[in-house]
Image 1 (cartoon, rainbow, N blue to C red):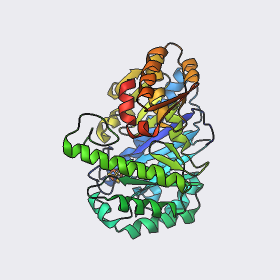
Image 2 (cartoon, rainbow, N blue to C red):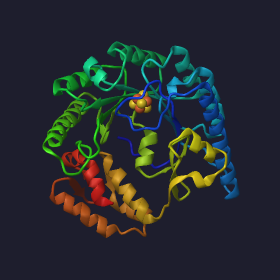
Image 3 (cartoon, helix red, strand yellow):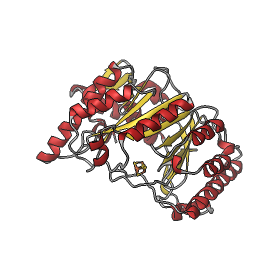
Length: 383
Ligand code: SF4
């Protein structure tokens, strides 16, 4: 895999969905026309405030490397709304990758061609499964054929990068059914596959930590089996794993996400969007109304504001960097964040090496396969 440097990205949260899936923790609502108008004009105001803030500090807001519209369901916006949102953000159109998340049944050839003409070059589609029973258990009310038809539409539109998201661990999903999903996925004209573990209950999945009851233990063991099936099947079929949940053909990795895992800078726009920029991490409120106060100039409405120092950044760089299969270069991170407590964290990592969770080879530190299965628990140890 090509080595990527941390860059500057823009994240735009589009907080609207046609339906609300039971497992989803993202902020979203079923909007009225008025909500969408309010949202787009507030995005323009929020950007205006960022430009003013940058000018006051003596620097112009620089052109980003990447932009990512997530949600929610950006593709549920009408074509005029997509165009208005893109134009509102024009000063921040990226020099590189521009991703838009879409959902099956919310795209049309003309919507896709509009996105392409605006400069979007990466589409990420939340397919989740091709199995009718799994789709039903996830609350998806369309047939698998509809997802396949939508995949075809995106492929025909010819974006440089096209990824789909799948979910494993739904109630009653067998290993055979999960492997069927994976088999169908690799046969599609996509070059990126994300495979996420469904977490109905925090701390009871293979992706979480915590003390487990017998039934939770069985559930976690089943999820670990499905996770390992993806880690075996996808790389063997042309999709190397480059992050805990992400697999891509060479050159089709998501540059925007890699930059955030490498502790680049990003500015988030829209309700619930987070930012890490100019030495500060902060979150927008997860409600259209409260976020509107920020867009109207009330900076006291930001949440979880943290002034970043070397210790904070070093720990984040370790946790997120270790999610990448390429791992981290420990001395490089020590050089980037010189005032952090390097030795203390190195000793924790050496402990984990003795449990077979981490591989340390010179300055390069990676999670082992056993470590990937408990990546969130590894993160907790490092905090
Ligand atoms: S469509 Fe996507 S963002 Fe919306 S509720 Fe379902 S999973 Fe969440």
